[in-house]
Image 1: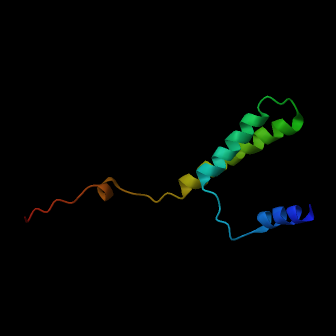
Image 2: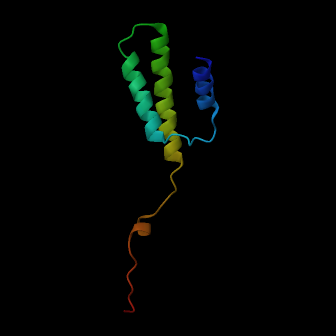
Image 3: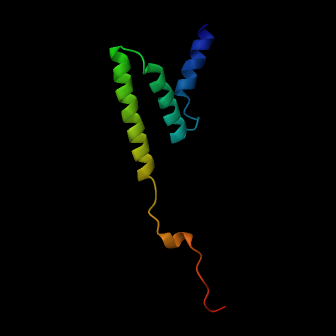
Length: 82
């Protein structure tokens, strides 16, 4: 039993694992929201608020990570000398 616990703790503290992608985190949050949606307990209401804030912040962070582009970045240039 102690071996299982230490393995779980090691999983939580293992920093070599890559961070989940934002869409994976949002999917997990959505699953948790669905799980607590029909609970009428104070912690469930708090959890819904926290998950909503998490989703908002995660989407905002993703949006802020985008680099500005111009439409001409996607168009091929025409060679007029050919």
